Amino acid sequence: HGSQRERHRWRGDGHHTSSTMAAESNIGVACDDDALESIRERVAAASFSSDKAAFIRTVCQNYCFTCAQAATLLTEFSFDSDKLEGLDEFATSLTDPDSGGDAIADIFDGDDEKAEVASKLASFTKAEARDMKPFPIEDDGHRSEEDMDRFIAAIEDASMSDDKVAVAEAECAEHPSPPFDAAQLIRVLQAFSFSDDAARVLEAFTGPQIVYPMTCEQVVEVLGVFSMSDDKMKVLPKLKPFISDAQNKLTIVASFTFSSDKEAAEEVLRDLVVDFRPKTPPEAAIQAALRRVGSCPSGYAWRKVGGGWRCAAGGHYVSDATLAASM
Image 1 (cartoon, rainbow, N blue to C red):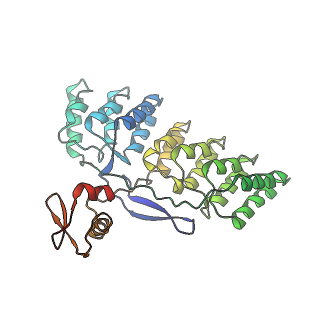
Image 2: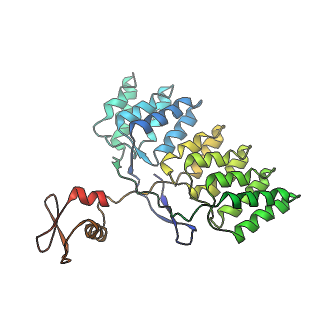
Image 3: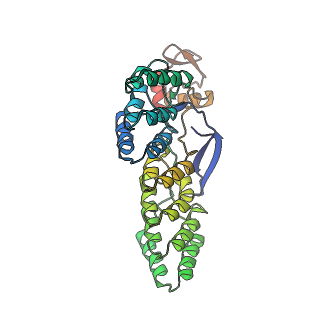
């Protein structure tokens, strides 16, 4: 699922930060029925096989699928050759390539195609479903409507486009907090008649990172301020660090009209993946959670026992279920 994962955090001073870490290529979010149907509808609506492949490539960067689910998506390709190429996108995203292959083979009629499916699946790396970490967002308050009205009025009062941009840049410098939410950002961008000016303002907002994180649907709304696809593509990298639900980035890729733009958007967002909970929580995190939910007045350390944890003195117990709920 890409060679790097970007993890984004809000610092205490309200600025957005990011760091990179190696991403495991065979873990993903388990695709539930609702997510599968949403993906299927987008794949089915795509006019060209290249678009369908780009969509599957996009979702495989965050989700993992059963073979039966993969077969559901592959049936939306018209030709067997395209289905086989589409199957390649699942190379590290199937949870049961060693046991569920019949579901994929069954969508093909020819023995040669079925044999090729078996050959491909034999080379695939089995994926593991993992829970996502919640995307952390610190609440730095809400920019009031009075402040927004004042700001928009100042932009409208400026006569020249450079002067309007200067007003926006001054606002960022003088009033950087609270951050702008998506609706407020859109309102500001819509105050500019020219897309180049709106792009300059967007950079002024995203550069110092005074914008709250946004969902993929909200990013699409921001992109909608720009009428030309070239302009949308130019600003997408600036919005990328603020995406809070990377598993839904197909929403952004599918919002572009032209195949070349869909493929370009997929490439821009390729390394944007969700952050996963560790399979085994670190010992320090376990002990901290035990202190939160456990009751050991003497302060003894907790030790693992069957079905849960017991303090070293033996008098207090926390079940695994109770601990998991607090992690």
